[in-house]
Image 1 (cartoon, one colour):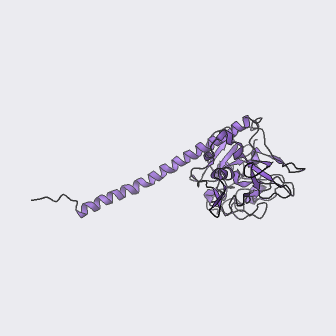
Image 2 (tube, rainbow, N blue to C red):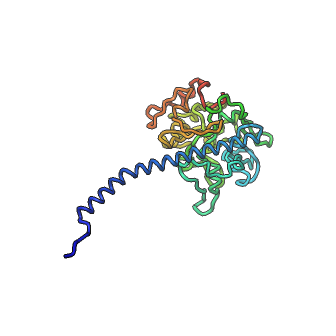
Image 3 (cartoon, rainbow, N blue to C red):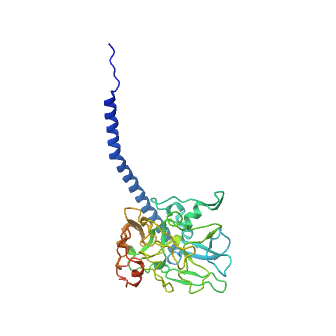
Length: 335
């Protein structure tokens, strides 16, 4: 008599149930491991980018890299058109990401592995206006601490482009606790205003923070990060500070072409565009070259700031502007 060696229906259901239970246990573990690997890759990218900035400084009289150099030339070979140029034709912006390229060699290190991928910008999905590399330079996912490292500027006059003036890289009193770079949002996909629009113009997120009146250039916020208390000499609005009411929380009314945009909390809605993609941690690279993950409230040391992902109790940006900074704790300046 032949024996039937096939599974019974009950046995088959038991096996399926066991597999389902194991999958339910293991899949979250796999997801956590993947997220941890991406977070480690982001730290590595931040460190490599910072080391490239340090190498740049070593070859440029020990001065910090400039967030944006203004030049005259042809876009996009020599630079990118500035969205708010007025009287100066042919004025182009060269972001810091292009300045360090001879040292970094690879635009991929400008990406936060936990963030979206870089993609070329096209017109009607047919003609590429900016390559993937261009978009990495224009819209990196690490932003330079422009206010701390480039504290002064000259205005475009007499046919000269003007521009930012970098501070000395040896001027930081505590390099291990002074921000050089921080992971930031993707201005094209994580806010309501894209960072670059056709044709070939760097337009939204241009803020004229060093203009001194009617300006001929601006700084593109898509490749910098702003500190919790953002108060250059001639900016009197609180919209560029962290907290509720900032340009990352609501649409801006001052200084930005096209206005600001609402982002998710993890994409920097209440933290000046500094992204908090890793369990509410920001990836930060420091002037001494190391990189680490920090909570938002750690990055606002020296100010009374209460970060809340829901925004319910997040400190109002106008309140931050009126506060006095404890410079012994503040990590965004060189003191």
